[in-house]
Image 1: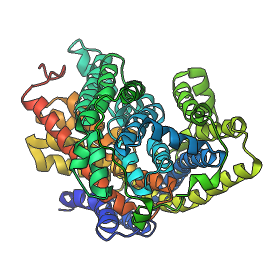
Image 2: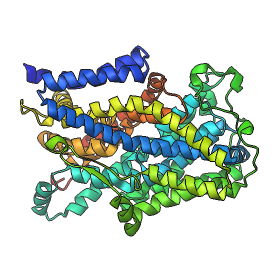
Image 3: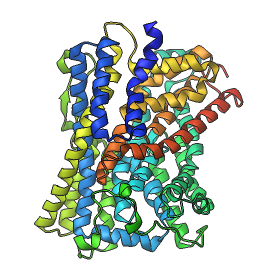
Image 4: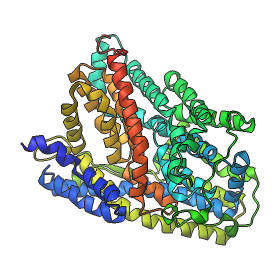
Length: 564
């Protein structure tokens, strides 16, 4: 009886978080401590985890939290550095010169620049970088965070130079056993893995083609003075063009080059093509769209970091110098992930915590230099010099950034530990599977042959919990593969669906929401953000599920292990 109820118990923390944050609109700083205690109760009394393992998981979560806060600090520090140096004022004017139309600006900053940053660094960096940049160029804080989170979808499976695929999928599958099965079919593991990568790329490319128009429509409907869908749809041809400028090179890169560079190549190529098109007025609508005057914005849209840039700094910075920190950041992120000697050096500065309290598989590490936070801080140091900043400007930037971190940290010290408890719950006196696996098994039993339709949802639940495509893939790839085998379906395609769903789940992952909110001073509005980001998440999961279902039952897509 209890076994039958395990999926419901496992789903309990997610349901409670949803009720408190979205339903009752309670701030995360009040809701998440309660959800944490609820999770501890389920772990101790339903899963019968040892108290020591729960405590070790909590410590592991706190260590991971330090790493995430380090990234947030770096992103905020860069924003504040550019704000006090005068560079942000120049950047804002530059975007206005390319186009004053906010619909075009959101495509350039959130979609194209954000996708590139995701490809280079991952770790939720795009939302942390793109959201404050949008605020600086004149967006209200709330939509800036929403848009920063929305692009945590299509590029995410190939974020951090392919980490979710290279580490998440390869590490999450039983490579030895599957390789033995493939050898009987004269197929190499590399070919099977490349098949998964290609299928992930195809599904994402189809779903992602409609994300820019969704960005725009959500902006005009929820944040426009006329609350209009049609004001967003009027730029449909340009939005699709901008989407394809990313997804086509992204698709070709994923199929022919592998998992490392689809998002990087897609973002860079897309930016070049779209800026070239804008300058030649290609597909640009005659009307221009903007938010209402800032005096008419609801207070719920405002972050406490919104300040007049003109009043902060009167210093004139050239366009080249103003953009140099972002260009340098992008270069360092890519170089540090692809140039092995540098990568190895940065990783060598590492605080490791193995088998915390002697508990199996509860490890954590802090690579301060390798994490995007370290690179962001280094870029800030270089910016201090090249922008010739005064000591008082530097101290103001550091002070403002530190204050924000303390606010974000309080929520995250409860959110991430509860996730680690759920993930680590597979070792228990009951000898039952972990909470995420229990949820997944419950869903597979419920759906049967229609399971492909919900397979992306399984991945999204994993990402919602962990705030990471990579971790979701590590947890659930083998489960998706085994479920496919039981149902006589393509294991490769089901693992691909897992990765796509896990990418989409990043849009609603609680600690991603908290982290992005912190960068623009919007803590406490998490429920409001989730009520909007659930819309593109739902679209992505339904559309990708239908694609997977169609590929399996209509196109009967080949799989080397099924002889089809």
